Image (tube, rainbow, N blue to C red; front, side, top):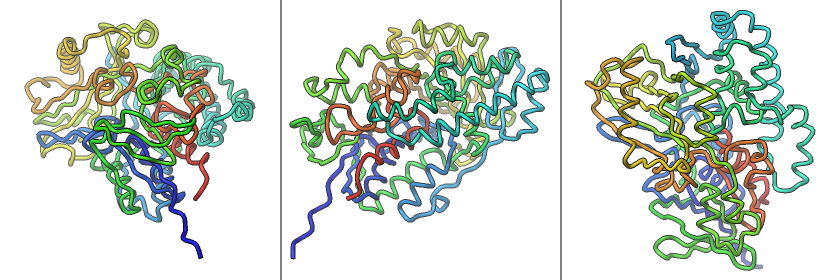
Length: 495
């Protein structure tokens, strides 16, 4: 008789949704897994700030495709509903235009048709054509390709028929404009890529699938905050004997003979592993954690040549009163749409005007704020650090400008009622989250920076090194990063 060999080990760098999902899938495949987190608590971009009795989710606030989360619980023999309560949000969003008019975007087909008719009834047939094409993109792009790893040129060729059928070379805004004539409705049905770092005038029309994803599965809020999901995933790992070690920044991925052998922490500690998975920003991982001698594909020059997503300015604030007429999710559009996006993505210019996403979770979940209070965050898309903006000196003035706009529109008297406040700028994404150029979503999701052209789930040069998260295939957003872990796991054998 011979003793069984110990199971191979895997280290996951980062505990965002992608990293936690990867750790669960590797554990279920039989690997001995350890998760290493730079911050003092799990979550990555889904970190939670608690102050003055308020719970502020740092990152994701919108949960779609809950079946991707339920699948992780099922893999562990558990029930998702035992740990997390999801509350459907209706309407999904209110889009408020600069002239004060608004569109309530929902999953109710009749309600959507009524809203469209309020703006331009002649666009109803075009809306039906748009929905049909979005459904096709969902089927071909999400269901058939989203969970597949694009690790070889053969994978790209296999996907080409679907890409051709979806006319993936066309832009999303162009697709919307072909079906819908009203300028405001064109915004309503093209803004979604901004939620994952994409410019509607540049991203492929494949991203119309987000419309179908939301209509079919709804938009949800995790009661207690998005951090409830993080805690639930960590609990699954703990029950499987997987340790999530915080305050453990990885400063090097160790490579020998073309193979990842483990990592080195900032305190000099070396941890060996058979498999290394990075949930960190791909550009940062390659440039800062891997010696250039091991990177034939992702050279410093290639990394610098990529186009990166916009960044975010986020103001979290709590008030000692409530605004019951403000919905859970509101998109507050500025006076410009295409021009502002051109400034953000092309010119890398911090414009005087802005569009905002106002998040009021206390509209649905009173536990995130003290009794009688409201908790908010307001997010402004801004250029990444390539703009040269000195956020240390600019942040407070920018916050004040946003506050004045909110007071003049949907939150009158706001300044008198603020009792808690904190800021996050592009510099935060760079310094705290180690994101290249402070870009909030990694590489911009252009057609030639997607699928096979995006950093692969399995590294192109180094054996046993894998990538998950927003900056690898299929991309940003909670569904995207969860599917990246599924794609990554599909390339590894069970043990």
